[in-house]
Length: 372
Image (cartoon, rainbow, N blue to C red; front, side, top):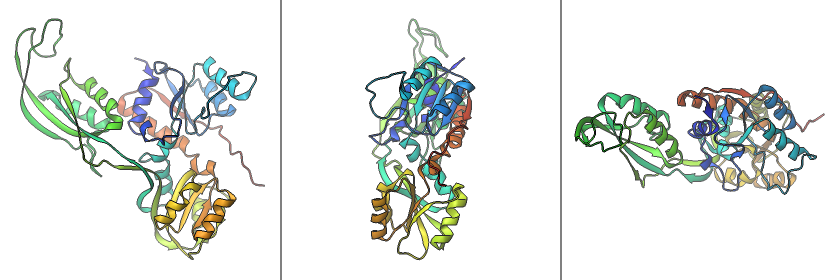
């Protein structure tokens, strides 16, 4: 059975929910149809003429981009202009376009966690909180011999997480009763006869943001024609979500040593540095992409420095006056790993959800700001 765009998006958002995105952001499916078929997907930082050519050449039916291809409202789509011509080519070649922007920045194991890992930061926390995950309790009744397959489907879809523990659930044996009415096709029992079945009541917890995917996987794995389940809203505090990260180096180092660490970690030959007051760096703030707006948050969190991109003159001036080191490693350089990272995430999610798709990472994305 062919895989659809909807199935790919549902699988991806089980890990990188669109609901994590900042309110101003433009994420999700931007061009195409949820019902389109997908055999091959291309991940890219941006949709450029080069990466679009690559997608067409590779016969990809879906492009997953970090930076939204359509951000500002379009007043016209003209094929004698670059943007309009690209849109026309995308539609002509039956390509669907999906953007995962600030939700990928915020997501656990997303871009900022990846950057923190590169710098080997410890005691990693959120730099700027955006919201708190809403939680629900899921209760479902399962015939005894099918508990494992239904439980696995629910937990693998993202339910059952409490802090640093996964697959958390409570199982209680009991007897379920029901009577199939006319027109039904029961898995167990006969029409108009009350049945008593040994069942297990499974209770677990789930994030509201991925409820749809979890319920879908549960019903697919459950043998019953009509699945009996309940959802209860909870006042429990879910995990806090946020953009950027704060963490500690294993040992303090001089700014010059930290610069060499940054160059090695991000594989860059140079960077821009606004010196701060501290003679050593131990607590690091990082925000991939354009993060000058987080200078104040980094100061409030006790950071000796902020690592980001797209620093302007007055950003540097403000940081200097506040005494915090500012390291501009470049917007492109801090986010280009979206390509292999998204590829890995989607491959893992596709395997969990049983999707038969090939995932490729774009190889034609170019750095456009070059220092001679």
